Image (cartoon, rainbow, N blue to C red):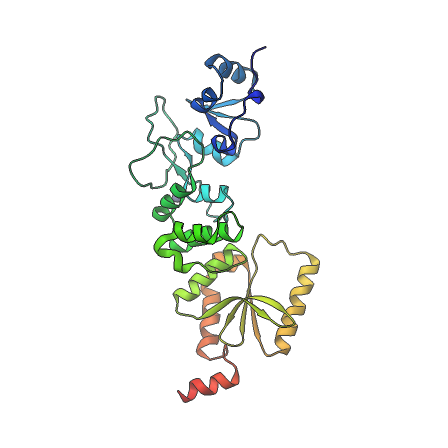
Length: 285
Ligand SMILES: [Zn+2]
């Protein structure tokens, strides 16, 4: 009968995405004959020379390995719990290991040299960030690292260490969409405060000036009927207290940002974000 794949106790760090390489299988006691048997029985799937998918393998990891690399860059950050950039790209790391068989061409993300050999199917976090620095916009990179921190996958000090010279851009946010909006507005010199607690209402996503409230709908939060109702109640309470509420959809952040930007610019130019006292003060200045 021989050994079965399920009898191997492979450490979790070596079978990320349920994809493993031959050296890991052998280090855990499998013989070449075992591996051939498991492939023949369909217990594991050969992806390319030296790499196998176990049951319930992660489809993105499988794609990256089939194409001659491993999961890297932004896709690795998402794999570790970071926010999905929704950029319709598989980000990968082409390993330094020369392949003996032709592979489909995968547009690999840039990577710091020298390229490493890899015996795990997802690059370590530090390498993913090093790649992301070369591949992503600053906005995308900070959004992903901040979401890892918000989701408590990494500590704030680890997030700061990973971002290095960009660490000052970290702040608090409820979602990746909020991080992106915050960075865009601060990049334009607009002063805002995230997650401001307003008595009787609770935290609002952003407060600009004294009274302009910006609420961002994140796609991840599926709007239930009760959440829909609660949002309207909040808007009404804020209006009664003199706040001006602008609600921005996820689609607007991604596809129609210019529109939102124009509205905010008009409001701020007309000092509608300031209350009467601040307006008088800024007019006198
Ligand atoms: Zn990339």
